[in-house]
Length: 370
Image (cartoon, rainbow, N blue to C red; front, side, top):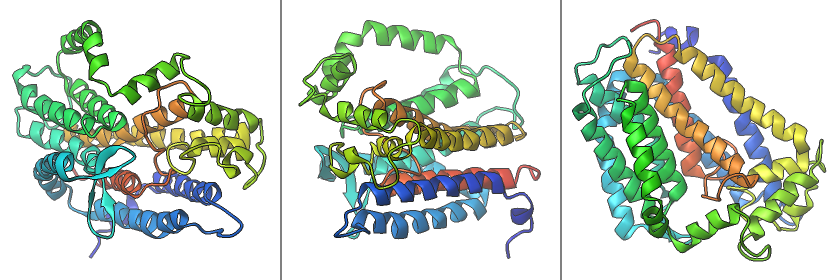
């Protein structure tokens, strides 16, 4: 039987905001793939049946499961994810020039997406075994206590980067670094890392794939508008042509004439801007902002350090994804292939985002029972 606390302390506000963003995403997956001959595309059907309903199932699964069991099994499962990332490098399914997926017969899954979900749990469980107070008080741990999780973080970053998937690799890296900052690593660590990155910039540049280098150069203004700059220029045209209130639903010319590549996945924000204009884009960003603020507000009420670590880790990968996606579609960041959470087409990303939000709500439900 389900404990009454699930009804009493279930955060309905964050759930409603999540459903509104899901509905908005479904609407624009429909719009970006609509044709008069086939109004309901296969992408829309998969996003509705497998994406939304599967995502809601994961949301409530992670919402009601025992938190201690999730932490313990999540810690162990992260090593399985590392094994899957290694397998992906050798036997993964190739799509768009990258080995990011493994095939499960009826569906393809990205192990790198699972890393976003279980990395915070790995950190929380690991540090729960260390000599840290359960109830948060800022403290500085010896650096040796961070060596193992930082090593796992580095291995995860390298394995995902080699797929190659620079965007997801950076999100994993930034999420992990945010967690060690929050837990209390010496701030000199970040100063040293920053200095090493600056000094090693020429080496890091050589490590990047040629197409990744071109994307950075495009951000700096280089490239032919008919070749390297084509995608970002078309995206910016779509955003600008929407004006204040947009051209209207299903009336975006850049979208319907297929000028914007990947308009139903990574560049769906440009479709929203073209059809609903500045007002529609602002409303969508406002929904994300309210969701993030609601989660941050409730996180501040959590007395337990390890619960805060999990919530922070599950939140930052969504937050970083939103910022990177909007930035790259608007031409302010390099194109790195990051979908817009809850909105872009893509089953793996949607499932992981819904599982993350369900897990967060699980912790909020239990916040008075620690």
